[in-house]
Length: 295
Ligand code: G1P
Image (cartoon, rainbow, N blue to C red; front, side, top):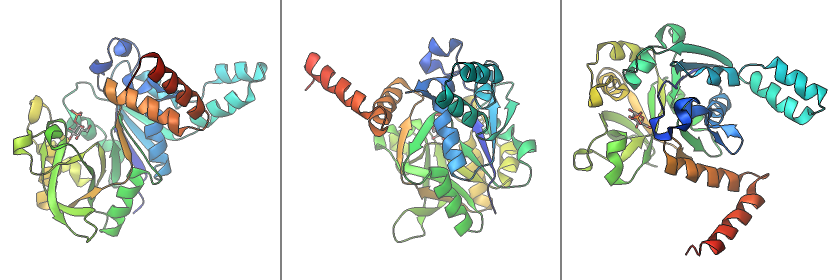
């Protein structure tokens, strides 16, 4: 079955980016000249998603506005002969169908996804976290959609290997491989943010999932979990007991743009990967290495 909808939770306060996020949603902070959320929505579109459902909170209107048309700006660009810029702006305004739902209280990622229940309805859907960017030749959500359709439209969690000392930052997955390449496994357990000593593996999810609507039944019954929040991980764990959940080691470079180090890393690497800014970034890095005697 085609996956048409992606739920993108963007209600978080972005405290790691204060004071910038006092007035600007974290997702609107740019990497080069595109807001972070642009890269995430682009991944969704390249994966075949037709409707994006943002789970928002107060102060996040800029995200919806970004994906809408802006006629005053278009008029201004026309009058000033800025046709290239006009085309870019119009393309973004027509990029994807956007729906927003307010999460009135931030009760956790599980609660955020549950807010999308009525809009999602009875079709399988994707969940894509807005502060993780994954880049590579094949969009990660598309890779998970393919695994789902090869396995009777099953639930799929995207995973990657992380430093075993960093398991406490992620949902960690355990399962049995179903392929000889050791890329796809039938998940048996998922644990939210375990300490390294308690982690069953070092396979972590950076926030890419394909779900059947049954996930909502699980989300409705889970108690509060780690950090006193309703955790998506707990609902996935419940789902794995009743139905099949696969975990797939995806291909691609993942950038955790939800913290300053990941953000700086993405900025440097995206600039080096971009044909318009590569030469500029190479020159800047070279200058800094010499000026600050970086070894
Ligand atoms: C959330 C999820 C966690 C996942 C992580 C990816 O945690 O609960 O399972 O691994 O996103 O970024 P958060 O980072 O929102 O605390």
